[in-house]
Image (cartoon, helix red, strand yellow):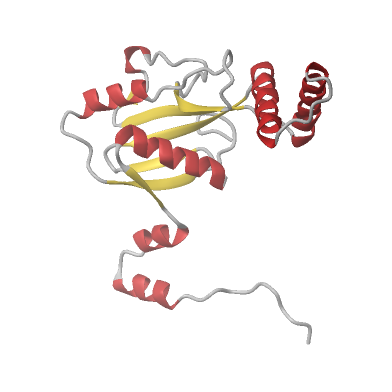
Amino acid sequence: MGIIKGSVTLSRYRVKGEPPSEFKDFIDERIRKFAFREIEQSSEEESIGWVSIHDYMDTSFAYAAYALDPFVALGLRVDKRQISGALLKKYHRLELKKAHARGEGRKLSRMEREELKEKARLDLLTRIPPTTRSYELVWDTNSGQVWLGASARSVRDLAEDLFKRTFELDLVAIIPWDLAQDAARTPPARQALEEAQAWSLFQEEA
Protein backbone atom coordinates (compact mmCIF):
# COMPACT_ATOMS: atom_id res chain seq x y z
CA MET A 1 0.00 0.00 0.00
CA GLY A 2 0.98 3.62 -0.20
CA ILE A 3 2.76 6.28 1.84
CA ILE A 4 0.16 9.02 1.36
CA LYS A 5 -2.84 7.08 2.68
CA GLY A 6 -3.81 3.64 3.87
CA SER A 7 -1.59 1.09 5.56
CA VAL A 8 2.07 1.32 4.63
CA THR A 9 4.41 -1.23 3.11
CA LEU A 10 7.89 0.26 3.00
CA SER A 11 11.33 -0.42 1.63
CA ARG A 12 14.03 1.88 2.99
CA TYR A 13 17.21 3.02 1.28
CA ARG A 14 20.23 5.24 1.66
CA VAL A 15 21.37 7.30 -1.31
CA LYS A 16 24.95 6.54 -2.32
CA GLY A 17 26.77 9.42 -3.95
CA GLU A 18 26.49 13.19 -4.00
CA PRO A 19 24.08 15.18 -6.19
CA PRO A 20 25.45 18.12 -8.22
CA SER A 21 25.76 21.62 -6.76
CA GLU A 22 22.87 23.00 -8.86
CA PHE A 23 20.62 20.49 -7.16
CA LYS A 24 17.15 21.99 -7.73
CA ASP A 25 17.68 22.61 -11.46
CA PHE A 26 19.22 19.17 -11.87
CA ILE A 27 16.33 17.43 -10.08
CA ASP A 28 13.69 19.27 -12.12
CA GLU A 29 15.35 18.56 -15.47
CA ARG A 30 15.91 14.88 -14.69
CA ILE A 31 12.41 14.22 -13.35
CA ARG A 32 10.88 15.71 -16.49
CA LYS A 33 13.26 13.76 -18.71
CA PHE A 34 12.23 10.47 -17.08
CA ALA A 35 8.55 11.30 -16.64
CA PHE A 36 6.08 8.56 -17.52
CA ARG A 37 5.15 8.22 -21.23
CA GLU A 38 1.79 6.78 -22.29
CA ILE A 39 1.75 3.61 -24.41
CA GLU A 40 -2.03 3.40 -24.80
CA GLN A 41 -1.90 4.10 -28.55
CA SER A 42 1.21 2.05 -29.30
CA SER A 43 2.32 -1.57 -29.35
CA GLU A 44 4.94 -1.12 -26.63
CA GLU A 45 4.77 -3.69 -23.86
CA GLU A 46 5.94 -1.60 -20.92
CA SER A 47 6.45 1.99 -19.80
CA ILE A 48 8.01 3.14 -16.53
CA GLY A 49 8.40 6.71 -15.31
CA TRP A 50 7.72 9.41 -12.73
CA VAL A 51 4.28 10.90 -12.06
CA SER A 52 2.75 13.08 -9.39
CA ILE A 53 2.61 11.30 -6.03
CA HIS A 54 -1.04 12.43 -5.73
CA ASP A 55 -2.23 11.58 -9.27
CA TYR A 56 -0.68 8.94 -11.52
CA MET A 57 -2.21 10.67 -14.56
CA ASP A 58 -0.30 13.90 -13.87
CA THR A 59 3.13 14.21 -15.48
CA SER A 60 3.25 18.00 -15.71
CA PHE A 61 4.92 18.55 -12.32
CA ALA A 62 3.47 22.07 -12.30
CA TYR A 63 5.18 24.46 -9.89
CA ALA A 64 7.60 21.67 -8.97
CA ALA A 65 4.89 20.11 -6.82
CA TYR A 66 7.19 17.16 -6.10
CA ALA A 67 9.42 19.48 -4.02
CA LEU A 68 8.42 19.46 -0.35
CA ASP A 69 11.67 20.79 1.05
CA PRO A 70 13.72 18.87 2.09
CA PHE A 71 11.70 16.03 0.53
CA VAL A 72 11.26 14.99 -3.10
CA ALA A 73 7.95 13.12 -3.36
CA LEU A 74 7.16 11.22 -6.55
CA GLY A 75 4.94 8.52 -7.94
CA LEU A 76 6.48 5.64 -9.86
CA ARG A 77 4.07 4.45 -12.56
CA VAL A 78 4.39 1.16 -14.39
CA ASP A 79 2.13 0.31 -17.34
CA LYS A 80 2.48 -3.17 -18.75
CA ARG A 81 0.79 -5.33 -21.35
CA GLN A 82 0.80 -9.08 -20.99
CA ILE A 83 -0.26 -11.63 -23.59
CA SER A 84 -0.96 -15.14 -22.39
CA GLY A 85 0.72 -17.99 -24.21
CA ALA A 86 -2.66 -19.51 -25.08
CA LEU A 87 -3.93 -16.28 -26.64
CA LEU A 88 -0.79 -15.80 -28.69
CA LYS A 89 -0.97 -19.41 -29.88
CA LYS A 90 -4.57 -18.93 -30.99
CA TYR A 91 -3.87 -15.84 -33.09
CA HIS A 92 -0.68 -17.33 -34.46
CA ARG A 93 -2.69 -20.29 -35.74
CA LEU A 94 -5.17 -17.90 -37.35
CA GLU A 95 -2.31 -16.13 -39.14
CA LEU A 96 -0.90 -19.46 -40.30
CA LYS A 97 -4.30 -20.47 -41.60
CA LYS A 98 -4.63 -17.26 -43.63
CA ALA A 99 -1.08 -17.66 -44.98
CA HIS A 100 -1.79 -21.23 -46.08
CA ALA A 101 -4.92 -20.04 -47.87
CA ARG A 102 -2.98 -17.32 -49.69
CA GLY A 103 -0.21 -19.74 -50.64
CA GLU A 104 -2.61 -22.49 -51.73
CA GLY A 105 -1.18 -24.97 -49.24
CA ARG A 106 2.50 -24.13 -49.75
CA LYS A 107 4.58 -25.18 -46.77
CA LEU A 108 5.83 -22.20 -44.81
CA SER A 109 9.46 -21.90 -43.80
CA ARG A 110 10.46 -21.60 -40.16
CA MET A 111 11.30 -17.93 -40.67
CA GLU A 112 7.89 -17.26 -42.17
CA ARG A 113 6.17 -18.97 -39.25
CA GLU A 114 8.18 -16.86 -36.78
CA GLU A 115 7.33 -13.68 -38.70
CA LEU A 116 3.64 -14.53 -38.52
CA LYS A 117 3.97 -15.18 -34.78
CA GLU A 118 5.53 -11.77 -34.30
CA LYS A 119 2.80 -10.19 -36.41
CA ALA A 120 0.15 -11.82 -34.22
CA ARG A 121 1.94 -10.59 -31.08
CA LEU A 122 2.16 -7.00 -32.32
CA ASP A 123 -1.49 -7.03 -33.41
CA LEU A 124 -2.53 -8.20 -29.96
CA LEU A 125 -0.39 -5.57 -28.24
CA THR A 126 -2.21 -2.79 -30.07
CA ARG A 127 -5.58 -4.19 -28.93
CA ILE A 128 -4.85 -5.06 -25.29
CA PRO A 129 -4.89 -2.08 -22.89
CA PRO A 130 -2.00 -2.00 -20.45
CA THR A 131 -2.50 -2.51 -16.74
CA THR A 132 -1.40 0.38 -14.52
CA ARG A 133 0.40 0.21 -11.19
CA SER A 134 1.75 3.14 -9.20
CA TYR A 135 4.00 3.31 -6.16
CA GLU A 136 5.05 6.21 -3.96
CA LEU A 137 8.65 7.24 -3.38
CA VAL A 138 9.88 9.90 -0.95
CA TRP A 139 13.49 11.12 -0.82
CA ASP A 140 14.73 13.06 2.22
CA THR A 141 17.51 15.07 0.60
CA ASN A 142 18.86 16.17 3.99
CA SER A 143 19.42 12.72 5.47
CA GLY A 144 19.90 10.94 2.15
CA GLN A 145 17.18 8.40 2.93
CA VAL A 146 14.52 7.13 0.54
CA TRP A 147 11.22 5.39 1.33
CA LEU A 148 9.48 3.30 -1.34
CA GLY A 149 5.86 2.27 -0.80
CA ALA A 150 6.41 -1.33 -1.87
CA SER A 151 8.37 -4.38 -0.78
CA ALA A 152 8.13 -6.75 -3.76
CA ARG A 153 11.52 -7.51 -5.28
CA SER A 154 10.28 -6.79 -8.81
CA VAL A 155 9.05 -3.29 -7.84
CA ARG A 156 12.21 -2.55 -5.89
CA ASP A 157 14.33 -3.49 -8.91
CA LEU A 158 12.33 -1.09 -11.10
CA ALA A 159 12.56 1.73 -8.56
CA GLU A 160 16.28 1.26 -8.01
CA ASP A 161 16.97 1.23 -11.75
CA LEU A 162 14.82 4.27 -12.53
CA PHE A 163 16.26 6.25 -9.59
CA LYS A 164 19.80 5.56 -10.80
CA ARG A 165 19.03 6.47 -14.41
CA THR A 166 17.21 9.61 -13.34
CA PHE A 167 19.48 11.04 -10.67
CA GLU A 168 22.72 9.18 -11.43
CA LEU A 169 22.81 8.03 -7.81
CA ASP A 170 22.58 4.52 -6.34
CA LEU A 171 20.05 3.30 -3.80
CA VAL A 172 21.43 1.02 -1.08
CA ALA A 173 18.80 -1.00 0.79
CA ILE A 174 18.59 -0.50 4.56
CA ILE A 175 18.10 -3.85 6.28
CA PRO A 176 17.00 -4.44 9.92
CA TRP A 177 20.63 -5.05 10.93
CA ASP A 178 21.52 -1.52 9.77
CA LEU A 179 18.69 -0.06 11.85
CA ALA A 180 19.81 -2.06 14.89
CA GLN A 181 23.37 -0.75 14.50
CA ASP A 182 22.09 2.82 14.32
CA ALA A 183 20.05 2.27 17.49
CA ALA A 184 22.98 0.72 19.40
CA ARG A 185 24.69 3.98 20.37
CA THR A 186 26.68 2.82 23.42
CA PRO A 187 29.54 0.28 23.55
CA PRO A 188 27.54 -2.18 25.71
CA ALA A 189 24.61 -1.99 23.29
CA ARG A 190 26.87 -2.58 20.30
CA GLN A 191 28.53 -5.53 22.03
CA ALA A 192 25.15 -7.03 22.93
CA LEU A 193 24.09 -6.67 19.31
CA GLU A 194 27.22 -8.43 18.07
CA GLU A 195 26.61 -11.29 20.50
CA ALA A 196 22.88 -11.58 19.79
CA GLN A 197 21.62 -14.94 18.56
CA ALA A 198 18.40 -16.05 16.94
CA TRP A 199 15.73 -17.04 19.45
CA SER A 200 13.33 -19.88 18.69
CA LEU A 201 9.77 -19.68 19.96
CA PHE A 202 9.40 -23.43 19.49
CA GLN A 203 9.57 -25.48 22.66
CA GLU A 204 9.89 -29.22 22.74
CA GLU A 205 7.47 -31.10 24.96
CA ALA A 206 9.01 -32.57 28.09
